[in-house]
Amino acid sequence: MRTICWFSCGAASAVATKLALSEGPAEIVYCHVKEEHPDNMRFKDDCEKWFGQKINVIKNEKYNGSIYEVFEKTSYLVGVAGAPCTRILKKEMRKKYELPGDRQVFGYTLEEQNRVDRFIDANNDVNLWSILIDKNLTKQDCLAILQRAGIELPVMYKLGYQNNNCIGCVKGGLGYWNKIRVDFPEQFQRMAQMEKKLNAKILKHNGERIWLTDLPTTAGDYPSEQAIECGIFCHMAEDDIK
Image (cartoon, rainbow, N blue to C red; front, side, top):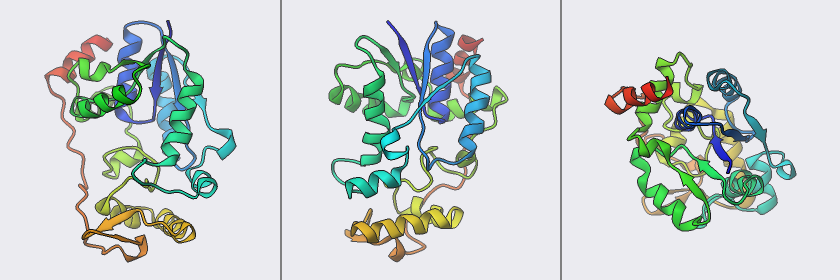
């Protein structure tokens, strides 16, 4: 039975991978997406040194690993069925890579138990190892463990984003997109142009769908800082790693 650690250049997936490796051999796989921050490659390299092994980078060649090529070819941005970029660039790539019986490690943290339950309901054939939840680790614990290990956090975290997703995620809310407009104006405009091209609006304000270009600058409330603390379970996990 293989153990597959799905590394995403996020703090949680990095710590989950390190903990899994401390308990035995595992393969580390990263589904690369073109629109992620370029600093992610630096973070990946740093994590490879921490892990003591290489990360297998895969991508959907049909779409050049790009969310915008997915949007163009599917004529779909986001809706009740979710985002096609996640399904095509990540889920489908995982399905192609996995083998029956693989134990699969994802970076679900303690506050994401509901996400784990939904994942299991939708993927009951997957042997999921939610190692961070098993060890009572939160997202903030993971950020702290990385910092204490001397690994520089990805730029998106340092800019105050809660997740290290693509620059301009269609699943983001009002405050998120107002922050993207300030930090990454070119990516904001690119998504706004894609909305118009596909005649699709990704945001809802006061109960109505609105264009990104009509988003009020005061809408939403996105935190500007990450409070990084290391609690008792954080220290226990560090002992496991050592």
